[in-house]
Image (cartoon, rainbow, N blue to C red; front, side):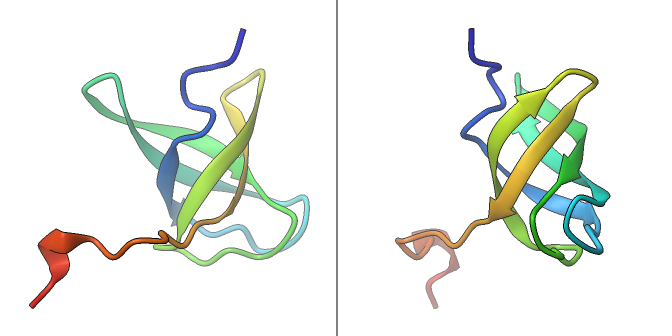
Length: 77
């Protein structure tokens, strides 16, 4: 069974400083927000949007930087 957080996007709240190192990601889920421990294959700075590609026991998720394909209409001038 796939964890419901897999495939969602979130925002890095504590940076991932290098490959295999840990940071934190804030994810909007279940009508609120939750923090997960994040790890990536590259450094990811605080505030970067990420995609959750895998979920592991202990609320650890693997993430990759996420760049939306379509601009957000709400942010248009």
